[in-house]
Length: 497
Image (cartoon, rainbow, N blue to C red; front, side, top):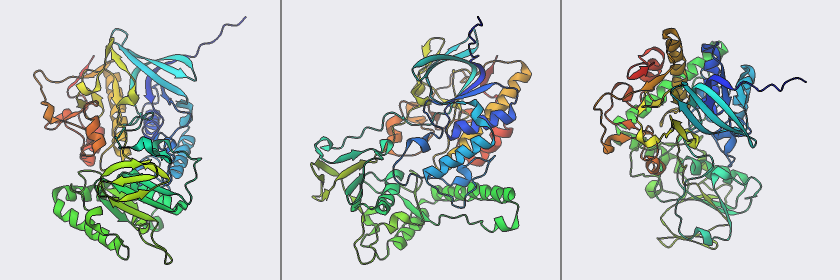
């Protein structure tokens, strides 16, 4: 009788997650480290991460797709903002064209990771449809995003349990529930709520109200590339590169100007809002006048002004979209009662109140048996944490495309791997200098924003030093970070052995 062959589950590198970060990392490893053996493990039954999880109407990118798309396979469509299904199609195309599917194992959920300093290896416990597998790797890359896929952010909404209609959270949208001719109240004012309002109006609801406790900055813009002429004058690849360059430079410049000149930025955005609201019964005060300055929290995008269009009536009929700025007194059996006395009738309530942030997909990690507590660790070069060997994680930017950040991590990993191979080193551990101390008040989130859901998670995530230098400084300047990832010193404060 022949013996049963057990697959070899030992790898040089294991990437956890097959969303945009994991797919990008797989491509970089395939092309830059052709001799490295690696695998990509995805706990869900499909690739795509965020774009596969969220199913709510209108789900779309909130960054331009010319830079959110991969630098090695430019976004092929004309619109810089697109909905989830088109993004999924793009990701599937990239996997197919570059044969990345051979590295990806779906329904392989990593449930634990243990580093052994003697063996110089990570041991990963993996659940594959109820069967346990054990993977071993020299390096692990956490490409699992920054929020909890299983549990939404819990927000106390008084009386919500009294509501007799349908309650929906955008993270777990009930695609079988028909909202046509129903009255909907969307609680929240972030990107999800700003996306939902026009999408629900378009889908045929009777009326939709975005109920916000406080306003958010919303910017209308034309959803088309300003460089369409390049497609006529240049080859396709060159035109795509020029579009990538434009979207990498111009929005970054605008954000920088807004942060340095907040009064001017406020005026510019308010003027744009007032222009969009002309002819409607909605005023910018108080609904579109936030207390914070632009880019202290992300600015929500309204492609082709779709959000504002939903606040206008059509063909002599009143608008189906509405914005109410008020605090909730209580949810009733058939709607919401606000503290100012306003009553909002509802057949369905959507709680678009934010995401619950988490680090590394909630995977418990141990170093020589000791549990890694993320909040006790400082971030090194935006991709590792002190005292944890051979582990990288991928994050993007608060005010630029996610992919720009995760690609820097992938490039850094490839450079470091090559350097360590050349020096005969096996282990890399970020180490703080002797006596380095950071006061709690200076421990800041890598997402340098003031949003409530970020503040709530600040004590459960690794952090940056607000006054850090060198590798302990937070990423922030996309061009400096891009240069450093490719040409900078990637071994400073790194103990190699």
